[in-house]
Length: 292
Image 1 (tube, rainbow, N blue to C red):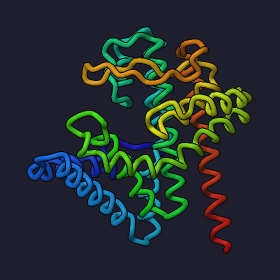
Image 2 (image 1 turned 120 degrees about the vertical axis):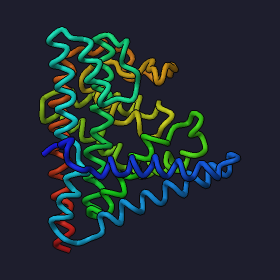
Image 3 (image 1 turned 90 degrees about the horizontal axis):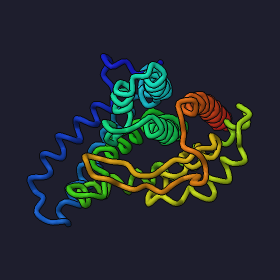
Image 4 (image 1 turned 90 degrees about the vertical axis):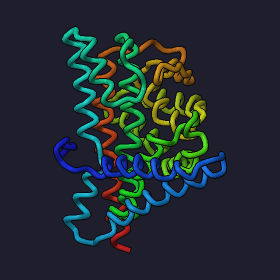
């Protein structure tokens, strides 16, 4: 159903709570240890708020929260908007549309770099916005699904290794690593399975995932991206710029070619299949569990 911007969304609530919690907690931060404790307290409070929001057993409330935890349609629509801008020859607009779904600086990106960024985001968000929420929804209902979305929001906002979040965001980053560990690997498997469905290269998805999936400093970041690089036959990773600062990420499928706009379209259709497979698996899991 997507994520209408006019509709209140739990992720926006978690974002606002994180910003407010950081402002309050920073008043007591005077050392790395105090930053670590303050950041852990903010993280715990917001994750608990997600679990509390998802606790009522009303079926309609549970369904609405489950809907809000999933991002398939919005993710695919945003990626399609980037494709349309490139196809219209409007690179400036493509950069603007891309900036809605990535954290890196987009102002100077050329077409291959726009394609790379879009595909990397599709692959990463296939985990964070689709498979991982479904995993936690299937295990624990809306309470677990909303707690995961709170963790993921915290990680995106404060879970950075650079100052000023090196210590303040450490608890959020490690909690996200743990919560996404199994879903990240399930997403890579789902990408390979989707390649079988779409008659693309499932073998290379598995091979590149096995070879390059652990090259990131994060235990999870390279899993789905490496599988996507393999199935599309493109090179992902490289130099990204955040706030004017350059950061190098490992090359995935380094011997392959650079991606183009056609590869974005293929990645979009691939993530749609991943979403369908993951949803089917979640339904099967809950049906089997319900019979026990």
